[in-house]
Length: 149
Image 1 (cartoon, rainbow, N blue to C red):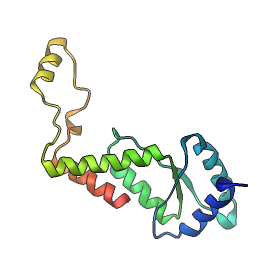
Image 2: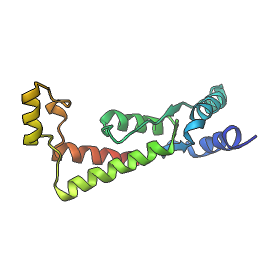
Image 3: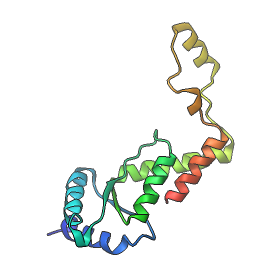
């Protein structure tokens, strides 16, 4: 018996008290195995807990849905299982948001060269105008990321 079947469920049981987010980080090849073991351990009545997956990459926005998911996980004493690359991507996203806010360089996807090429080739924007990053959007994403931490 090793970490996944013994230590991980025990840590999840002890740390998942409703005061903090319990995020268990496992190597990517062991993600499905770890999820299965934790779900099996916490599926019976006395130890009933939800087990969720935290998936994130740098292109993902720190949305209100992600914040709500993490707050719900805390309140339900659920466990979140993820990989090191998802945690790294989340931290890099937070650093990127803070850097953009600090320097005031907000990406607007409005370069004249790109606009000209889109017009010449008849291409449409790959990102809707509503998703363009401006200061309030960046601030909201950064605030959500900090709350998740």
